[in-house]
Image (cartoon, rainbow, N blue to C red; front, side):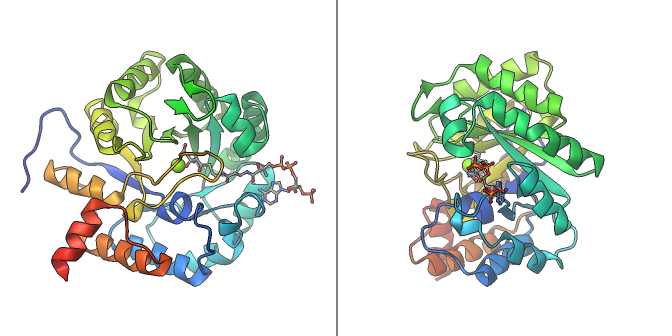
Length: 307
Ligand code: HMG
Ligand code: MG
């Protein structure tokens, strides 16, 4: 049943991260053909932004070492945005060589995670991204700036809003088109989300340039998303079936499941363009490939109903 609530957007763009954030933490390497089919099925379910892979060092994320083989298999997907992660110019060169037109750099609000994830201080990572963003913009590419540990960090504890605002501003000053605020370890609660978004708005960051990226470790991802929607955010990251985690952040678990998100959005009368039945069938199919059930409540409910 659809029952709208006041003060929410009419439409939300779901930024699907299952093929990248979802799979990057899987120990057993998923065959490239299975990843390609996963992306095709996600697109067929109506997702228009499907993050495909990362051009990072293959030793750092072995699961995504097949980026060169995977990306060309997605060439027939017309009208679907296929962003890829690039940490540095080497990654950008690899992505450009395959014709990618949307890239994402990924920063950290904390020094500990910048070191663990990119082997650099926060300011050194920003210096590493500067030529990536400027070269990408010269080619009219779309650049997303991820920011991890926006709420809490496994080594440093709670993260002050002011630290987050500083790095967000730095990413926008480099030329990033949009931001994605990462709750990498899933510790945020709705008041904290509202406080961060208010601080960003006060610092002059337009809300239409902000996406949110919640992991669901403490079961707060949907509540946090609702707080972000109430603040005017219309881009929400999610991972089909709730797959995910970050190999360089202890205690990072799965992302907000796309199905759980879409169930809530459709119940509120918010358009997404996503076919929930096809999407949950895709996650059930992927769960079979991975050999364990999806952690998404919505996937489990819908696929049981269908059986
Ligand atoms: P480093 O060891 O400092 O690398 O790692 P380097 O710059 O010293 O280079 C060493 C060698 O690696 C060189 O080769 C480079 O060419 C090569 P050599 O000259 O010795 O033969 N190299 C590369 N090879 C292929 N592709 C590349 C590349 N770059 C250098 N792009 C580095 C630095 C950035 C490479 C490494 O730290 C890295 O790859 N990190 C990626 C970590 C990652 O992918 N983490 C997960 C994504 S972030 C995330 O999940 C959070 C998010 O979801 C939001 C949230 O939840 O908060 C986005
Ligand atoms: Mg993530």
